Length: 149
Image (cartoon, rainbow, N blue to C red; front, side, top):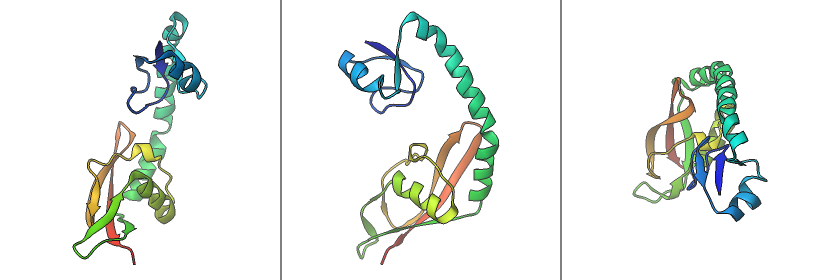
């Protein structure tokens, strides 16, 4: 069954992409959850309108993302993790932990899916990662993983 994705779905496809999935998955999960539309002729015609509206919303929020970039400028986020004597942490630092630390320490709310970790963070130290909030606003998050006692 062909569907139009309304959100990025891991292992299925990206937003606004037309993909083919099993009919049961589409009817029982994706469509009722509002994550997809049936890719019929009517909805394929509406796809350009949906893309245009979302582009306008994103452009309207550009100032908000620039403000977040200014707040993060020069700030270092501290994330505590339990570690062994060699500096290797137990487990790894996830985008969920980073999102929670942003909210707690800097009062900035960022969706965890917008935080892309290039590799697993398993050692104490300083890291820089990009936040993908807006294509025209480059934001780099500086954070330090410190030993939690």
